[in-house]
Length: 334
Ligand code: NAD
Ligand code: TDX
Image 1 (cartoon, rainbow, N blue to C red):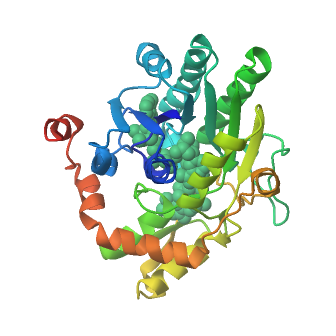
Image 2 (tube, rainbow, N blue to C red):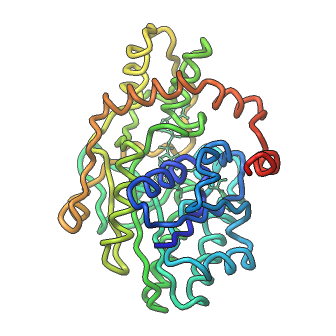
Image 3 (cartoon, protein in one colour):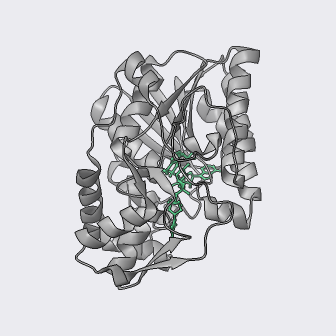
């Protein structure tokens, strides 16, 4: 299969590229990525000379580039997004542009080029916030509460509208919080690890009792791959990690794993509109194509800590803004 992977230089997209190249030797991948602050060409540099792989720097809102690439694709797997809730609270406009307008630009190109297969990667945050009990599933009503989740919800609706109105062959997946290698160090787990490696304190918002369901990124990538090949058109699939933890538990576990005391964690001002709890019922994906999370949380967390310890240059270069630029890498790639 020839795949167009949007956002393939970001956290999950990078892991997905490596998953596909290893699991499907017959597949070809073109990555379209704008290389925003969150996209890093270094992530996929090791495969830049693989004949099955090509990188294109560009914006998913640019209809001409998108059209040109969709034309040669059997399927689009859409990861590109503005993804950080805190940034969306400060400025929602790039979220509306990329997550909403960008998604529609891709859908239009898929229609124009003979109804190309489209898989949309979304989030459990579109369903809002849970109390102490219950889980989100594919039938949960939409109730997004941050500018980020509202923009992802809008994108989900546009994808579903393309199926109902134009019979565009689409699937959607909504997953819980991912963790693993290549995650930008603004997100909770890599932020905790890198702060401790730099002798800083871990900032925990509010009372630390907000709950997230942690999913190893490799399990998520396997789920997206299965939904792409075995999902039913027009359907949504939820992926969760079966690993609910409070933020305080996450911080304390990382402290313990890294040999640090509780004094290295501090409670700070809460996030505005902070969703209390997410949890996912993934039984539909399990029943329809045999997906379930395989990575035990502690095992995945230890591997993630080891990765950040072994790749200090990767995250220090991000912090200093000194990673190699796309053009520089292109010039040394042949
Ligand atoms: P990320 O921020 O690490 O990466 C996003 C990538 O998209 C970057 O490479 C960036 O350069 C690229 N991009 C941004 N705007 C673009 C544009 N206009 N045109 C082309 N490329 C653009 O994000 P991530 O954590 O890898 O998330 C990937 C997807 O998964 C997103 O759609 C996100 O909403 C969804 N998701 C993430 C999580 C999570 O825990 N990280 C959980 C659920 C869903
Ligand atoms: O410094 C911090 N301190 C803290 O307590 C940060 C960065 C976060 N938090 C809390 C907020 C959340 O309750 O930790 C939890 C996780 O925060 P993030 O890592 O920012 O993730 P979240 O807001 O839950 O959203 C993530 O999961 C769903 C991704 O960023 C989204 O892209 C995805 O859709």
